[in-house]
Amino acid sequence: MEHLRWRPSVNEREFIETALQSDLRVDGRHSFDFRKLRISFGREDGSSEVQLGETHVLGYVTAQLVQPYRDRPNEGTLAIFTEFSPMADPAFEPGRPGESAIELGRVIDRGLRESRAVDMESLCVVAGKHVWSVRVDLHILDNGGNLIDAANIAALAALSTFRRPECTVGGDDGQQVIVHDPEVRDPLPLTIHHMPIAVTFAYFGEGNIVVIDPTYKEEAVMGGRMTATINSNGDICAIQKAGGEGVMSSVVMQCLRIASVKAADITSKIKKAVDSYTTEKALKKVKRLPAMLPQKINVIDVTMEDKVDGELETQTVKTPSEVQEISKDPATTGKARSHEEAQPMLTESSNAEVKIITSSSGAVGESEEAQEIGSPKSLKDAIKPKHKRKKNKK
Image (cartoon, rainbow, N blue to C red; front, side):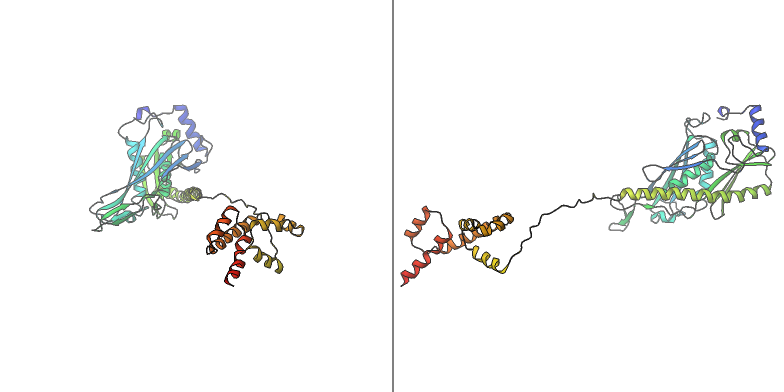
């Protein structure tokens, strides 16, 4: 695999080393400047994409219920897996992971798991039987140098946005685990105590020249490398020296001080990106109802006097024909036209009263009923038989 890696010529090597001695780098940066960092997230929770200069890394987090280790029955597990695609670098071969892939996974795993950045006890569901196993997959899409720092940021960003399903314990024996659908209950985020940031230094010459965030060409020329994993509080989580030339202790302490400052800056960038992603996703979940348009309802203003009230009481026992006769009166034509919608209601109530009155007049003789069947019944016809009843009684 090493024979396929790009090797600089003598002139290229001398040019890079001479520029570094003058505090200049090939891409125009200073010795302790990071390349432009860009963090983005996918549609699903737990997926992140990091671009550090020309280096491109994709991170994805998944989880499943497994049995815990016997020596740690109350703790979940966290595993880091890396995949080097030949598309990223011709030196990467498909199939079994090479030395670079194994080294990358171990450095990131040591910084995250050994520093207790993720609360493992919160991943326990049933002690000794069911715990959550979190898996972080890191895919190298483009190797532009300094894969460790880019992959570490991708892992932290993916873990910060990951949500595991909520589960409850039930059943007769209290050992049955029920995993709830995300639509039923909101998934739960991971408990992250701190963010261990990996900062890589490259040494040139006899260790006197130190640069941060080496590029692909600088890695081919460098004599040694050191990765310091530090959180924003200045706590050293892990240090890894990948062989090469020796470095004095004073230089190592200087690198650690610089790494603590860079770690705080990168941590703020990750949190800012995660907060913006969380806010944007929360706004998408809000169901906005369409604004109700105001509808104009025409309400007729009816002003009634005492005399009119009396007239309405008398009109309720009149037939529809009499209502029409009343509407012909020139004094009431104006009011009738202004209350066209109210007239059908009056006629319906009058018809109902006519039916009630006619039913009460069922005691009249059969001869009188036969005469009334041929002619249309009206309110006057219903009232006339009352006078005949009085004469018969006399």
